Image (tube, rainbow, N blue to C red):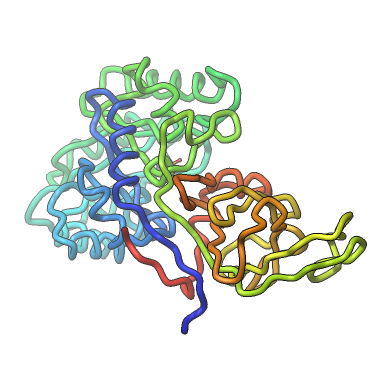
Length: 369
Ligand SMILES: *Cc1c(COP(=O)(O)O)cnc(C)c1O
């Protein structure tokens, strides 16, 4: 028998979360962002749930090939554009739209022999200082691109550094919004500004931010982009991934006894401990401390002691009926409609839902349901 651990990908939740993006985005179209193998869920596994999107955005040519191999004929956007000139041949062959964020990418395009002209997204660095043209250089880049026969259409684009900030109307969004409006003033073409956080927080009320395309990443997978200010229930998002494993042993321990490596947890009273077949080699964060929430048979309890490579140990006090074979939910959906948001586990471990879902280990069997 294989180790009793598995991840489940919930197609209906993906479709539901996409609808939440649509509801927030008004008349803007929605990119489902599926970079990093669909945030760890698997491009092939999320395709059915997300095929109602207007397009798929990602970074990697191999991932773009996989989307096309699934039969997707609609828009596909390379969020970092081309890494070298010959990537443009793949863009032509696969009909990929691509971001232009630096001058050399325009040089490559100008030298590219293409049967059909390309659709490009011209990226403004509005203050995040990662990718994009500086505001002073943006208009010249647009003019240069618009003069190329290789270019069919230019969408104006930027990306926010602070869309998930705690206080409403975070200064980062306001200043980046202003920089975008100034740099693009009078330029024709569609616009794309919002990631998940900006879509949920601002797109409904601010038509400039909403633009023509929003880029829904983390929210598609059911994680709240601005946790803990707002949780996934607040945004009406459903977990797209469940990580669950069975109890493979239980221990009755006396008051004063400790659990696991480093003896980091000591029982104050006699208690029962459950040993779950999931550890950091499965992608569960080793940094999760005692007290991190976990569900057993759908009942909320907590981690006790350190996470080891192949196991975690949990407090069985709230679930006296649980035994070997009972199901522990590390995150996602548990028995009886219970839910443990991935964001709560990530928060306890000092990270984000993004990192946990991306880190699901290849050894964990995954099924779609
Ligand atoms: C990853 C990414 C997104 C999606 O961000 P989320 O916070 O996951 O919604 C949007 N735009 C760009 C440019 C990205 O790289």
